[in-house]
Length: 435
Length: 164
Image (cartoon, rainbow over all chains, first blue to last red; front, side, top):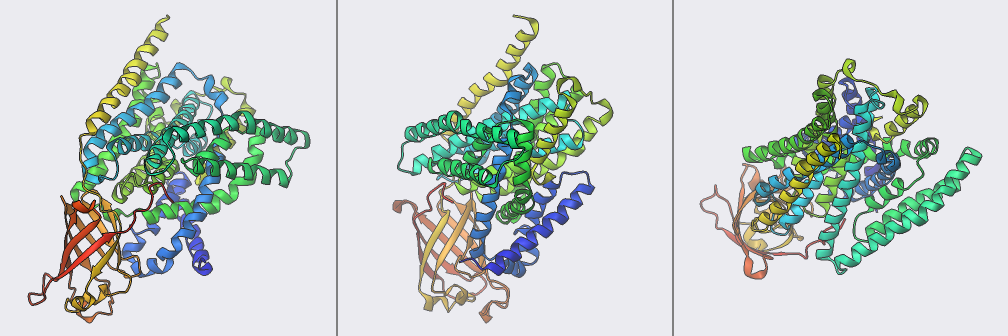
């Protein structure tokens, strides 16, 4: 049984610190989510456990962390549902050559560079229980992810959602996220199949069948929900509970199929009807508790697993620097080159590259999965968390430097102003605790 | 094919398809790499408690549950006692040899720890036992008159990968 006093105390401290640090970061024109990620690190062994080990042991006794983790995972499951909800596949169909090229290069460039880096890091920070292929593929997937929600928040804050840069960045980030999650799902299946009883083909067949049922069966049910919303202007509590059950059920199915809870909830969000008012209505009902209560717990739990103290000696810091360099070079550099070759002006292409380099919360989600399945070691996890913080933190100032407001060229003709405003607010919502 | 389409195809081939071919080569090359042996996980320590008393700080190890947890990151590792002893050790792995220094917690009940004594752990992984056995000694480097204490550790069944 959990010690209720300890659990409530933990939640209180985490919420207070996350709000405080998040507000502080807002003063430096950073999205709140960056501050909350940083707050998580402060509460872990990297700072609190280092300067006040006894208080840290009292506040976060090892026996209590299971409950904190469970609560935070529920939050991430719902959050991934909201992220999927914010992705509209129809918008991706009409993207230009530029978006197609940039999105694919922004995956392959960091992926290949990360795999190249894996050749160097594997003998140094991994062990022989992990195969090189799994290690390299995971590093690639982790470095090629873009934080779609944080990106949307930054674009909305800078009023860039309707600019060419904004629309291309959002489309590319959505493609990156979907692709990154598919690759990650494949890696998780590979690793679990190697240690489980079910064959990989059975697992893949099960996943394929599940996706088909979701797209052609469950989506049909969801259209009924949308029709009800349009008829009555609201959805009853019972139907909202049914929707939540579907999201959780989908998460359970993917977990049982051998991938991960999060893939199911993400898929459930992705197949939801995308009419902006309907999406807005669903978000309003789910996001407050998820973003203000549950996600900070996830940041804190991630912080508790991150120990900067594990980076002992210049060699470890050198590896960390290399990771940041390769992640930034692959994502920012690759996207910039692709944007330039697609005919974008250099500044705009560099701005796009900077935006694509935002990793934020999505990176933390992936890294936690990697640590759970032991494909990355605790020290590498800490290095990658630092990389996620660094690349997310640098986005706003670098973007401000490369693309000051005066040089942005809005293309309002593409999206009707009112619809664009609503779409912007939807994406802002899925910007997580950035709000 | 129009000029812009041709440029797109060329750029796509150079920036996407070619790197993917390179990726296949990287994955093939990486298969020949060897990483340090895995010592990550929970181990059951078998050591004579009476002998431990003779070591400075030895009492902090004389607890009923002698499970030790090793969190490995390549050639370095951190050793902790999940049963509650706030005792940690950082160590290095060189081939099959482990070396670590255990730092007793501040305010330890063992008075012999008061002078900031350290315990040194030297062990080797028994590869014949599938890397599931450790054999080694505990000693106090700053105590010339203290004898080393031998120990064995057996790896507990590893948690299934991908488990939560």
